[in-house]
Amino acid sequence: MSHVNEGQLHAYLDGALAPSDPEYAGIHAHLAGCADCRARLAQERAVRADANAILARAVPGTAAMPSFEELVARKAAREKPALSLNAKRKLPVGQLALAASLVLAMGAALLTTAIVRSKVERE
Image (cartoon, rainbow, N blue to C red; front, side):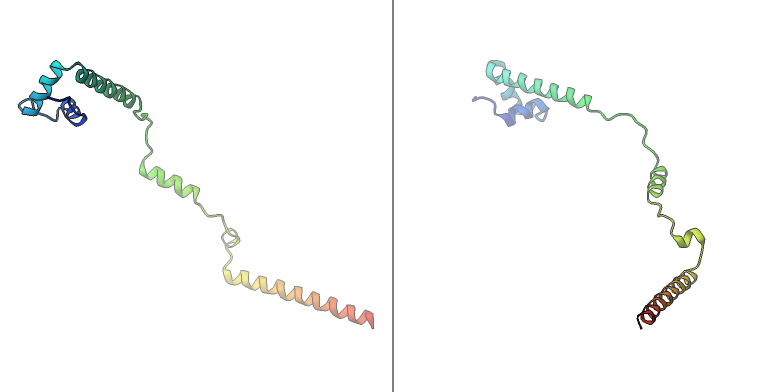
C-alpha cells in the first residue's frame, strides 16, 4: 500500500471509518509498518490537541446578560428626544405661530419707521 493520504489520515483520526471497514483495516495495517505515516498521524493529533487547548481558553466570560426588557429600556433612555419649546411650555402650535407673527409685524413696523425717519431727515 502507498502512503496514507491526508483525507484518509483525517478520516482515520476523526473516527469516520468504522473498524469493520476494509479501508480502516488497510490504514491501520499501513500505520503499523510505516514510521513516516505514524509520525504524520502523531503530528495531526498534536495539532488538534493544541487547537483544542486554545479553544478551551477562548470560552466566553460568565458575565450576566441583561434582560431583554432592560436592553429596551437602555435604548429608549439613550434615544429620548430633546424637549422642544412647545413641550416645555405646553403652548399649542397656534399660539406660537401667533407670537411669531406679532414679532415679525413689530420688527417690520420698527424698520419702516426707521426708514421713514431717515428719509425725512435727509430732506
